[in-house]
Length: 240
Length: 104
Image (cartoon, chains in turn yellow, cyan):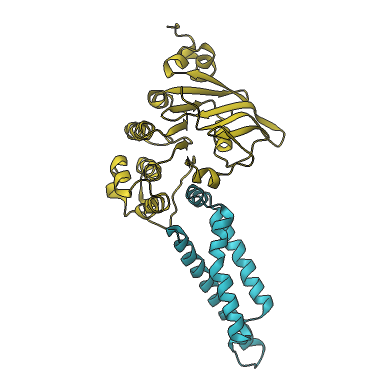
């Protein structure tokens, strides 16, 4: 396994009296697609936001290429190759999709809108506003922004939310393109079949900590993961 | 200048001009009702009013940039919320200085 590009190590986070994370870790490894799974409220998004510099951790550290960052912030991490897709709409309502993709092309000059739109299959949507797109089209357009940016690390928070299964395949294909280009991809969500299908590695976030379960096949064989996350139907299934 | 900043400057200028027009109309009406004093540009300008305009725009622009989807867009382009807000404020600050010089 290559060294992680970005790493949130042993982080803890509380909101008021509620302890969300006590000692959780997340690694983004170049060329890998990592699925961060866990039940709602277990701190997946919080961990992703800490790693992306959106919210500070109470304890623990964030390292980028082995360098410990004293005060990580998303704009700073973005300049060093990170791209973060939130679990809510990402585009401005004031510009067309094409204009917003051009922002990324012109700011970073690593890819072109045409290439990104072709890979994400959104060429016909470039002159449209975000409000006129379906959920699946919007997710593809958001990933086209990542393709236009060509990041070294992509964090995508619930990218499969609210879209049809057919769009899952299109998004998975884009994640694979990014990873094959050397990008370290980390995605979260609850769409287990799609996530396990696209991921190379599974990290399970539960009870304030994380467990590196390894490949999706190994994750499926992990009894506690099946019992506590996948559900009773999977838990009673014979191992192997 | 990077491309997105130009959009922010234009947007900041549009919000500022609209706000200035609204203030001018209100002051014009108030002056007309309350006194026989002739309405001039000076009536619609004072240091207090200028500070009010800038202060109000800080709030408007903060709310504008804080709308979370846009905040994430600009952050992914490398700009913090405060930077985008400062850019949005540039037209208002320039406008108020020019307005102050014009009417002093």
